[in-house]
View 1 (cartoon, rainbow, N blue to C red):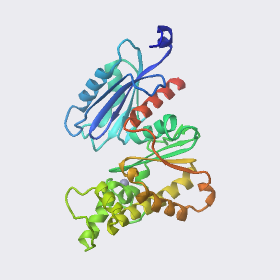
View 2 (view 1 turned 90 degrees about the horizontal axis):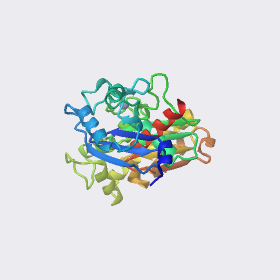
View 3 (view 1 turned 60 degrees about the vertical axis):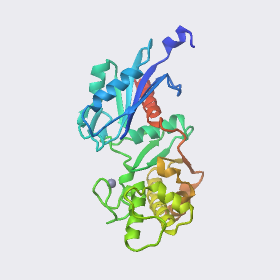
View 4 (view 1 turned 30 degrees about the vertical axis):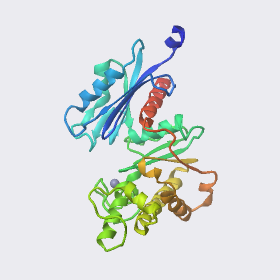
Length: 322
Ligand SMILES: [Zn+2]
């Protein structure tokens, strides 16, 4: 336990991460990454009442005998980090131009901050995880979609509308497969988990031989397992994803020139299956070798609480700015 004089000097923040399936909330003291409290609850985002479920989760994680300085939230975008409005998120249909930070401030009587989950994962990895000691960080999360976050010169990149670093929606194959956003040929449509599965399905329908069958519940992990057992179709699905990931990341290096590329998300756990073809493709598509000198390529160091820790980093930055 800290003596009361030290507690008085510390700032306490409540942070939250609203995911497709779960809402996570935690309280942190200053930059101690071990939470004082931690709460996880189902989000049921497609059903009404998500804001009330969030409020309940925050109330149950609110620390006793501490003055909370601010609430800081990670949410799927698109959103406006400046105004704290969630513009539109497929996971929570009722949050259409939803003024999240205003409503939280009104309820809890403290300032509230908001940024998108991939940006905050990047911020968390930079402040507390794999990107510590770097000034220029490229973060990509690859799971059911591809999200991105960028730190350049020790600043989180937001852009004019707060919409920068939507790296999954960069075109890597003109007229390629349709992306979750409705446009064609985006990186997400070629290298995220569902893209890997879709390719396997298409090839099976075209008559390719494989131990995999076109079951409804086929997923990217099944494909990875089959690839590790030597299944040629499964291996080629990961090779293709890695190749397009290399094309995308080469362009990101040309645009941003980071010193580290950090991969998060479930698909990034697939190891050499994805990363060998990725690195070969990256080398083949980078137009000047100096981009690759001392470039660190690594997987994320923070686990499921990366969004909470990113939101903590955001709250600390806001406090220092003021
Ligand atoms: Zn897209």
